[in-house]
Amino acid sequence: MLTCEKSICTQAIQLKCVESRVESKRLHYGRFAVSPFKKGQASTVGIAMRRALLEEIRGTSITCARFHGVVHEYSTVTGIKETIHDVLVNLKEVALKGDSNDVKEAISSVTGPKEITAGDISFPPSVKAVDNLQHIVTITQPISVNIELKIEKDRGYRIENLDGSKNGEFPVDAVFMPVRNVNYSVHLFGSGKATREISLIEIWTNGSPTPDEAISEASEKLIELSSPFLHVKQEDVSYSGDYKGLFPSMKLSSQLHDGNELAKKLSEDTFIDQLELPARASNCLKKAQIHTIADLLNYSREDLSKIKSFGQKSVDQVSKALWERFASELPRNKVHIQ
Image 1 (cartoon, rainbow, N blue to C red):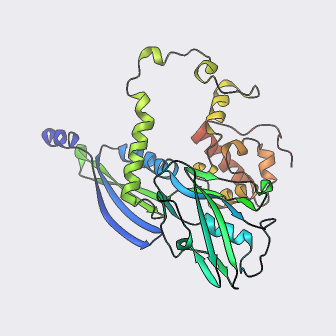
Image 2: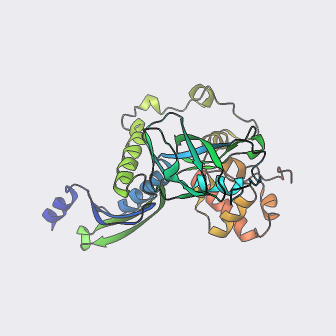
Image 3: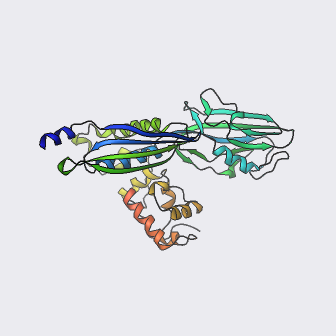
């Protein structure tokens, strides 16, 4: 038995794709088995991989669109079926694959009647549409429609403010998240002291990376993020009590204690999706324009309870998740101006 256990312990952890399918051009699915793990390790890896896949994988997205002669997003143009707002929503959903980190420009110049799709956009060589048939706008009359686009590569979300729109140029809410969803599960095999775990990881992407490309990139990101801890020395972890020396560019708020102060600064760009709240609570927060952890920390428990359809149970769920995941607490006093 001891010999068997030693053999399993020294066995290299392996990853194998057990299922792969293309449900559509913009929805690819992959299921991977990773094993063998000691007890508890599969969950550690599963949690880390899920976060890396959803948060660290970079994607390419349209971030701005310019329409000549258009005043605001709800304008209607003679000869175009959709409003400008509808076109912006369609552009937001266009799935792109890009190799460049630089800001790129593209243009769509079409004469109707015609349905404009992603295939009608002239992209630079480093960018291409995942699905050329993806709908953008319908031209119903013999007119020319020119749309100038700006394309960027980043990660996460970018929520834009349309109040700053001018000269027919409109920012587009960008979703730089090519991984749409991730699930993982843990299963046991073996018996007694030889019991080990296997993790099954399911990944859905928009097709710009395949699931196997996404899991490979996420693994590299995890290694990159953890590399500072590989060669830690005693003098590196001695407590000095001075965050400013470590982060000289940070303007730390005097309203919080040191620990919460640093946590808030580090998490201000983190979206509330990482709290993994129930759908109802998450949707209520987003409707109240609370998109990031920094936004959330501007609300006390009393403030949150006044949000429509947001009950005390949801407040408790937010408070618990905020503490468990970011070691932060909601302000005690009412701080948000309704």
